[in-house]
Length: 207
Ligand code: TMP
Image (tube, rainbow, N blue to C red):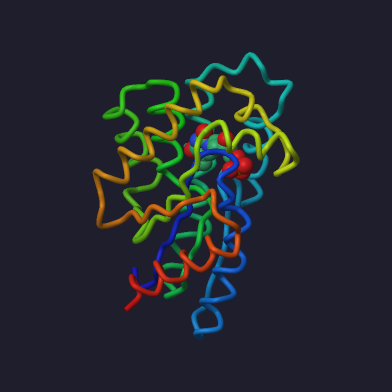
């Protein structure tokens, strides 16, 4: 693999999705070929799986089913899109990736984290990001943003506040376990300030 794999992570409402396009533009302005994607989704098959996961009508979905659906959507994205583009030397930026599964299904739902790690390894064929940007935000503030119109409200948002607090704490733990890969940024700042911080962080990793 000769490309660079960058992921954006964070609790719901952290504002990461609005940061992807300006970051891609910035890197393109430096002459890099950049491809952006998001999870769950990013391929025709993965987008169909996303609809099943997110649909508010699927209230009876068991957390184990949910976990496996996220993994299946990702397996397809990795093989169809991410690996070939990295092999071609591109920068791939993904709005969420495997760390979301560890944060939401591992820490949020409380599944055995060693087991989740093994399943992630299987689903991704061991592909890990080179750099992960964590946009950190208080769980309550993030959900407030979502409720006041920051994106479409979905089945995952509707989990209890306690679930979202565990997700955030999980992200903190993940970032501290692999400090070389993660950069944590304050997601409560204005989008412009967050973008500036992201560009600085990416520049420092690229140089
Ligand atoms: P988003 O597109 O607004 O980020 O919504 C995706 C939701 O799915 C968000 O609540 C995080 C959640 N999610 C998981 O629970 N596990 C995963 O592996 C991924 C990729 C997302």
